[in-house]
Amino acid sequence: MLNEFWATAPTSYKVTVFSAMGLIAVGIILNLVGNTSGNQGLAMASLPLIGLGLVLHVVGMVVRGQSIRKNLRR
Image (cartoon, rainbow, N blue to C red; front, side, top):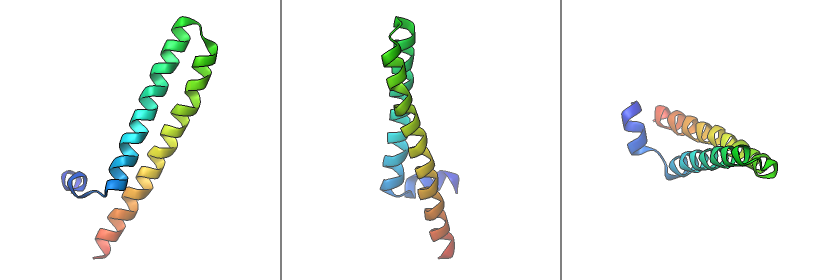
């Protein structure tokens, strides 16, 4: 079932997962650049991006759970 889920996953789940991964990645890169260059403002600005990525990750888990429950009821 795990291999089948990605192939049959709703588009909303895929978009949410990739958005979450992208925001977390951008946030981590900005944080690293900000901390290595001593730019504290950039490092602090990256934290909301990481937080939003984590929230989207949780939303993706909810969407996946609803999709699985819907498929099991059939």
